[in-house]
Image (cartoon, rainbow, N blue to C red; front, top):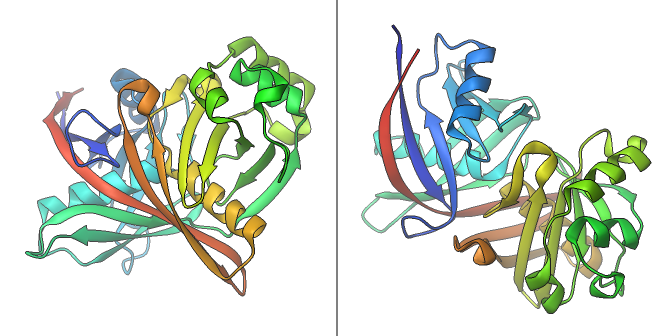
Amino acid sequence: MRAFRFVTVDVFTDRRFGGNQLAVFPDARGLSDAEMQSLAAEFNLSETTFVLPPEKPHNSARVRIFNRVAEMPFAGHPNVGTAYVLGREDEASPRTYRFEEPAGLVEVALLRDETGRVLGAEVAAPQPLRVGAELPVSVAAACAGLSKDAIVTARHVPTLATDGGNPRLLTEVTREGLTAAAPDLGAFRRAVEAYPDQTRGFLSLYLYCRDGAQVRTRMFSPLTGTWEDSATGSAATPLAGFLLSLDGGDDGAWEMLQGVEMGRPSLLLAGARRTPEGIRARVGGHCVPVLRGEAVL
């Protein structure tokens, strides 16, 4: 029998049972790929992370992120929550972690209060913004269970974008549409079949309604088992970068509120800036510990 310690935290919130849940295995040495995937499926959360020694000694750790069905190259709230767990276990830890992940090297800065206690973290997307294909309004509307009138196209049509994680279909909607949206699994499957080159077998829909620097969002990814996500850092960063690309200027910051309709309100503090290599984004927030235990295999 082998035992592996885990911690669960709520990410992008300052109160327990809000935000997005995450399970973290701070020392995953000895776990196989199949065991990591099985544990992620067993926890049945949007993501579970496994911390391993870095391949290069000047980095902090190698972090592997699994959703219910597959490993992910990068994700936002798992990086924030993992850094928080490691920082809370060692309050003398460095301010910034460097995590090795399939999408590249990920930098995560700890957020502390005036006494130095770790409150959360901020993660920088590992790659510059990449804007992909546009999909028809009818596709986004069908996936969200909305009429086409609920999709706002004054500034852009539904557009795929990423900065290291899975591509998200960024779709602006009316406030009423945001409240009424409900994912249609059949529509997601039809969209992937109709647009194989653009979606590559995966489709995640990120709806948003904007009021200046305040943004309300919802994220649906039923093809990976996440019917709705309460906080999606790897969608908030491409959205921040995309908004900056639309607005112009050198930098911008937005407060993104997600998870309200699920009863798990989350606050994601996102920002983006222009760099010589493109638009770079970041997202941060607070975390709250919830459970500790062991997985016995």
